[in-house]
Length: 97
Image (cartoon, rainbow, N blue to C red):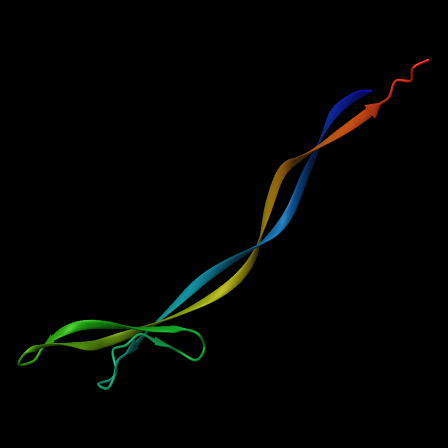
């Protein structure tokens, strides 16, 4: 029996989906009753307090403003070009006479 291996090469170009997240930042003035805690908003956004020290009679930490960060997922297409290789084996049998 004889065995031969062949390699086939096929050039392919395919589009694949790629997910990309973009962040949107919105600055909001803080009010006097702001807790100063990181908060999850109902829409899934995160509200992060930005703190600064303010000189009163003593020093204390107060909320200066908040940053609201929202994310958006965008699906983009990316073209990939490459070669695919496939091996084939051919078998031949010899008959004895």
